[in-house]
Every structure is written in structure tokens, then in C-alpha cells.
Amino acid sequence: MIISGCGPVAELRALLPRLFPAAAGVPLAHAWSGVLGVPRDWCATVGLDRRTGLGWAGGYTGHGATSTNVAGRTLRDLVLQRDTALTRLPWVSRRVRQWEPEPLR
Image 1 (cartoon, rainbow, N blue to C red):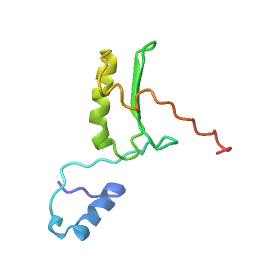
Image 2 (tube, rainbow, N blue to C red):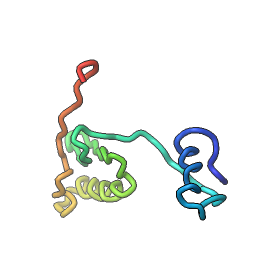
Image 3 (cartoon, rainbow, N blue to C red):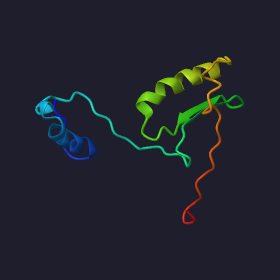
């Protein structure tokens, strides 16, 4: 199936053969696009609140395809209370200053 229609995926599909002529006519089976999560300091964070049991990982600033694997393994070690090289990474339980509420920002 070739991705068509409108939106960012269709725009990228239209651009692909101009950048890579050999890709012209090659079908795309899957595509993804979504919201880009950007924390104030542009650094990802992973954490676990032991009191509530809620874990989080995010703020990948467009690098989620590579970061989510490490984030998932880091969350696993946090849940299992393992002291590993992953749980000692600087992104574990980082606190980022919040954005000001509108209209002050």
C-alpha cells in the first residue's frame, strides 16, 4: 500500500523520491507521526513514583525511536528495584522546571 492523502506523512512520502529517486514507487507499509514532546531543557526523563506506582518516560525531543528501548529497560529496573547502570543514568528522576502558564509564557 502506498501512503497517500494529506498531512505530514503524505508530504514526506511525496518528498521521498525527490531525495532518493530509487524510492519512487516503492510502497510504504507503515507510517507514524505524532506530537513532539519537548521539555524545557530538551532532555528526556525516566522515573518511578514508588508511592503511587506510576512510572513515566518521555521528553525524547524527536529521538523516541532510539530512546524508548533504553527507557523501557530503565523503567523495568526501577520497578524491580535493581541498582544497574541504567538506573544510575542522569535522566532517572530528573526534575525539569515547568513552563509558565499562558499568557505569561
